Length: 380
Image 1: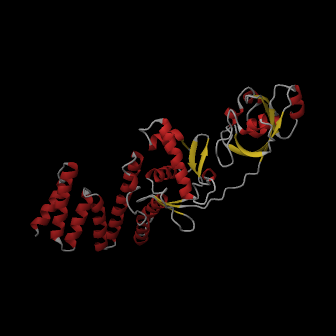
Image 2: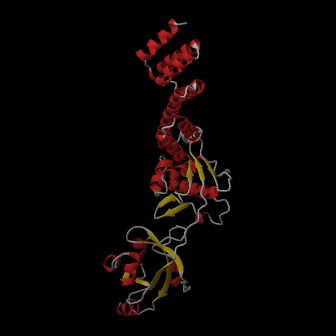
């Protein structure tokens, strides 16, 4: 080991030597500076375990029998190559690595790695427009829509939707397996996952030479994530942001315009084409539907303030078409029908509410609604 220290302790490149089995024997000061691991932390560990090397595309590279050691054993020259290495802090650095095979008998080292940081090019993403309200729809920057037989597979779209909702955060393979194939054994589920990942990559980027080179669906350290999360436009983000702006607006007419713009994004319940598959879809679906119904009620109230009675009636009817048990909206609609001189329509609203509450919730209408109903009936 004295010879290795003599040659590489002062070099400006990160340098470390490994035994034939991959155990790190020497770790110089430049490697400490570049990767954050002290010599005490690095020496006697195995290089693939410490550094978790990935290709520039995010595929696993380091392994007990990595390509570098295979080539050296076969007498094949090893040229410098780019590899992502895990810093002590957990993030990955794009580096360029050279390898020097050690002659037998010099010491216990099988090879020495020399490492330098590579100027990491900023990944250029062509952002998608992703629509989750209603069935999943993804359009590219040029306006073309992601489609085709691979995309039409339910698991492909489910994986895309799930990764989108993680907002760029990494998701472990195990978490995805449990979500998509909870009833399968590990081997069968992994086969399905690999197929689904391939299908999604090919759907998003049909012209890829190799699916593993995808710019969007990345695999790192046992986890998948959707790259470029901040660049992609999501309808649910625009929807919720628009509703918040409308609620903060003090001018009723401006608020109406803001509500209408935001509500127009609601093409249907969140991922309704995936509802039967996953509880995480249903949970989000209920939350967004409640926001939608509340916003419709706010809009109807604004129409009432502006004396736009017909528009208010239409809006309350939209609410009841989705949830016939919305008793407050029923009373509002009954009152508006009375204002328009449509008492029979008001009575029918209450009758439908009574039936709906009995069928859906097994309850009776409230005293407040009953009083209004009797008042209307007495005025006929």
